[in-house]
Image (cartoon, rainbow, N blue to C red; front, side, top):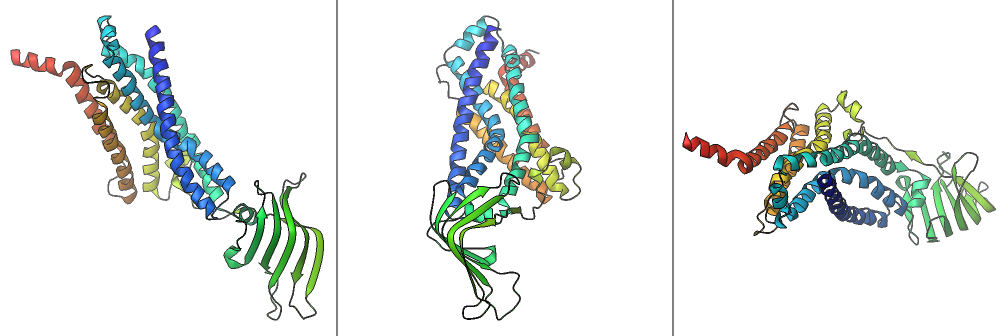
Length: 370
């Protein structure tokens, strides 16, 4: 029991540290990409932070198998290099017991990965797609760049803001020109122009609707020089901030797992997505079984002597999974073959390594004697 607690503590610290570092690296890359799009005005800074928060659990589900794989290599490799495993073997702690002590921890990681792959990630991806499909006044204000004229709604609206507060709630010196969709008379200027010294956002406490309120400004409508030309001065002019979601195509990676089993359209994409989700927890088990024998190192060679071949095997395995997924979607291989052959090949490699380290030489010696 003491050994189990010791191994669990070491593995937990290693998994948290390595997975956290990998997550930080990948999130930094995503943050730079989202930040560049926010700077170009495709969406606001607040949405960029929301997208980063959504990507975190999704990336965590992908990086946990690799984090556990590297953790076992580092922790057990250090114990072999420091002769801790030699002492434990002398006390009757065999490779089978080491595996039995590792499997409960591996099962815990598999449960977390399964929750992320089957339930949490699809919901977050669906929410991400809704955020990216948002249009309307709310999105326009989120993406406003001070000091620049910007067009929206296919050129039917042009607006300008001289300056804006850090929280994007208060604006100064506003100009807005909007096409009057209700006007069908070709003799009347179709544009409604609004100017204001300032403006701010507010939420109606009763309805929960968001409003943009322009202050100390004027509203111009009609054709200058004609009787229909109107000028209205106002202290406050409120506009309800429309925010609706455009048409969303049903993406397989955003569908609940239960719906994927009954998908009638894009069956190949649904099959590839199902097998991809199953691969996440399955890879945790396979990589853990692979890391246990590969972590066995000679103290003279150092604790990182097996790191390069282990990383090479993982890169080949991960790339085959991604290539196999695209093959399923393209119809190059049938779904019943799918990604299973990749897991079977890795399982055969694991069996060969285990057999070579534990019983292969003994079998050959007995065969030669006979």
